[in-house]
Amino acid sequence: MEFGFVEGGQPRIPRECVQPELTFWLWSGYNIARLRYEILLAPEAAADIKRLKANLRVEVRDAIGKHLRHEPGKTSRSRIKRLRGVSHPQYRIRIGELRVFYDISEDVVEVLAIVPKSAASEWLDTWSKEEQ
Image 1 (spheres, rainbow, N blue to C red):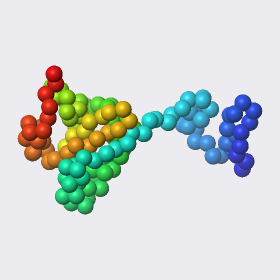
Image 2 (spheres, rainbow, N blue to C red):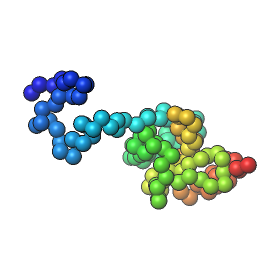
Image 3 (cartoon, rainbow, N blue to C red):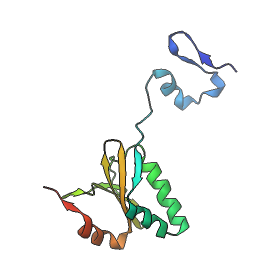
């Protein structure tokens, strides 16, 4: 097997290494790389994650990495919601019975709090800022 580049900068990859479903992306010149957002935990969120049981902590870290690293503003029907009527926090992600509130600015996602579903509305009443 010989890897390298042919004239014009196209990669030369042996056929046995190419998966058929990826062939279009490989040869089209289409860049599938996405911007990676930096994820910052507010001190309150760091304290919240430390209070979780180990299995929930892993679940939250995996979900934050999976959903917020590349497209944190992409809303869905049930998992990620843009909060209406408030300017801070901007979004909420559902992870099982937990709710993670976060803001997006340029290339940074700031996780503000990780709270149980039962305490989410109380947290929002206390910490959210109304839109003006």
